[in-house]
Length: 480
Ligand code: 4AD
Ligand code: MG
Image: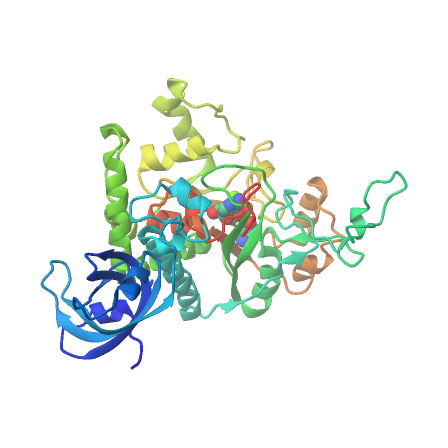
């Protein structure tokens, strides 16, 4: 008898047939009713044991989280909510579980508690839904770019370059722990770490992506990236996944259009293919919000929020316009912002949230940021007032999240790029390979990076980024 998955079984009409199911016990009531879950859906399959058919010894071993193989007959269910159940004819215990020691009890646990037992939290409904959705979104990413003819480029994890020039890198080392090479003053000589070369974990695949785009036309990356920033927020991870498309023959406007289309596409995919999990999380969020005072609750439920995003254009404003809006805002006038607002600042999350959540109430694309606060590779805008130089950058800000995308048109003009690198102390000799794209048939090109976990947060409504990645890497958190 071939195993059938519970999701598939529950979607069928209850016609009499023999089936085999396998899964973990969620609950066992009255020595008779097993709620069995196999991870394919949050809906448990009810398995009915005929009284007297199974011996006491077996019944005792049916505990929460024990794993079972059950063969039985499909029968229509009298209970509400499900059409069918399985009447067991044979039952095999694959793995026992000591219910006393099992950390997950059949009750609601806090997300904080579940984070401490992240190795088991997949077995809860909330994390079941979150990670099935994460999977669907990842699949939709590939589907989107594949349909558009982009080449999926695998950029390196270990690299010598600091793509963002922000110096937030984890170093890679092959140093022998016992006897590392030392400088004259006795300190460890980290210069010779990666087989005699200095290297780090990548912060972004963009620079390598540009090499691909200037050959294939359009590429994207989708892989883990690393930032050694010591930030303990609900939006930052030390290891996160990023999707970075890079397009030749593309300007800032094309870049914005692609990013908006992309975000809408993957949301739509999740809405159409993972409705059940989305509805579960929407209900979860609604229940959570009921605990909040009226004025702290969201106006829209999770699904309405996603529908709204699909049905409306993102707002597009320049950085200069954004600063003006902030300066005119009641929040600024009443001194509600913790950080000052003036042209030239790197907007803080309170500013970004004001723009998206209070002012526009929808995703906003902010363009043309001051050159001084952005990376060296961004295309310099022509005709700027001295002291007010801007670049063709774009950030997408999402309600409840803040920055979800960062991107730009790239500086394709060699002379301007070299000058900028010098000003920003980016060593041209180390990036000789990157500069070759400008030497040999340079083209206007652009790209962006979407933070995948922030995107998953947006779709699932999960408030903390640690709850949308299976094994979150944050300061001091790397056990498993
Ligand atoms: O704005 P960032 O730093 O841009 C880049 O890395 C560019 N090279 C992208 C490109 O143009 N190809 O990062 C891009 C996005 C951010 O908007 C954010 O969503 C996410 O990556 N991100 C993080 N997500 C989680 N934890 C962190 N520490 C993150 N840092 C950035
Ligand atoms: Mg950014």
